[in-house]
Amino acid sequence: MLHAVRRTGLVFFPAYDWAISPSHPEREERLLYTQDQVLEEGLLDIDGIIEYRVRPAGFEDIRRIHFCVPDEAAVTTESHLISAGGCLVAADAVLKGEVESAFALVRPPGHHAMRVVHGNRGFCNINNEAVMIEYIREKYGIRRVAIVDTDCHHGDGSQDIYWHDPNTLFISIHQDGRTLYPGSGFPHETGGPNAQGMTINIPLPPQTGEEGFLYVLEELVMPLLEKFEPELVINSAGQDNHFNDPITNMNFSARGYAALNARLRPDIAVLEGGYAVENALPYVNVGIIMAMAGMDTSCVKEPNYDTDYRPQPSEITGYIADLVDRLRGVFLEGGLKTVPCEEGEVVQRSRDIYYDTDNIHERQHEKIRCCKACPGAFSIASTSNRGQHILAVHVPLGACRACRDIGSAWFEEGTRGAFTHVYLQDRVRGVYEKT
Image 1 (tube, one colour):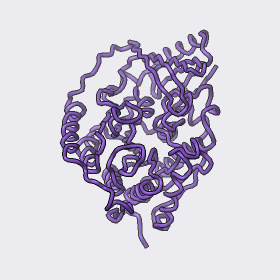
Image 2 (cartoon, one colour):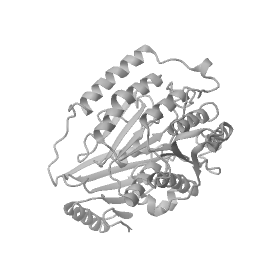
Image 3 (tube, one colour):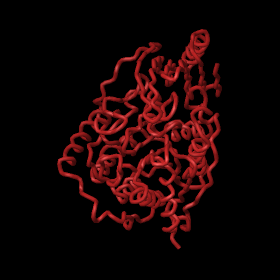
Image 4 (cartoon, one colour):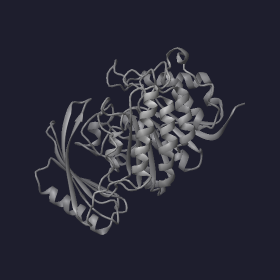
């Protein structure tokens, strides 16, 4: 009988009754083929690979991280809650020591969902990884977490949520935003005033293959993780870099994904994208499961690999080597140019956010208090073309007295304003209020 070298948990939730539309890439079949492949390969019969049953997340789990407009019930379905809850199950399995790693194969995905949620963007309503990370921090007291997002699309929602958090290292490896949705994720996006250098974007050119991904991992990502010394590594495991994926332009294979996972060795992987539902996603997911379990993945291969796979062009190899060299200089060798931030100074920014799936336009105005003692309190005034005008105030875990006070003052001031709703997310007191 085969044995897993590393005990690995597997959480499946195909969301049988949820789809954006019957013909949309984000539909039920996405994980049904993977489920069939896992059963056909007998992975659940391997000693040390353990399947866990899902459970729904509660609104209290979502409120640790999101401001849902007007509330959680309006922007979630039962499938969203179970998808996020499946990640909580994976987290419990790892943090209780039942397994050494876990893979949450769940949908709907989540990494485009930002701190404020008016609806669906990039197929995402709820950021599953963020809900899971804040659950872990609340329940297990872990602080330093690294997210390595390997989806082909920039993880702009996760970046937004952890933009101001110096305890979360967010690394996104993705197809260059000049050529793919959501059009962000460039090297100059490095984090907010209290967390400069904690956001790292690695935009790769179309046609990048596993040679390029593995080079980036070895020469840049692993040294960044070694420098940060996280207590936990999370992989946002998007499988849409595959050479068969219908909505992207990359050149990754199932065996390449397995090699990446084996080197990264995440504590928990959470499924994001991947839309070649028949001829790629099942094989990529099987490769990742085997890699997480420490098994030999040399036999993992798609049925059409020999006919359709093309090696990475040499000009792409040269481009990536130059990019990695520049990013090493910025993030590993002291080249990051930080913006001065005086203690107690309130820094502001405004931006527009488009929800492509639900056609919602949002305008945000954000304020954050610069603080050397904690991640800093911040507020977001958000207006959408659906008629909502809200104020959201966040007091972070470990907030100092000055940041707690200014957060309370912003909330009280907001309740006297003309907002449709005012929210307070106070992680120090564990309080969530809404007017």
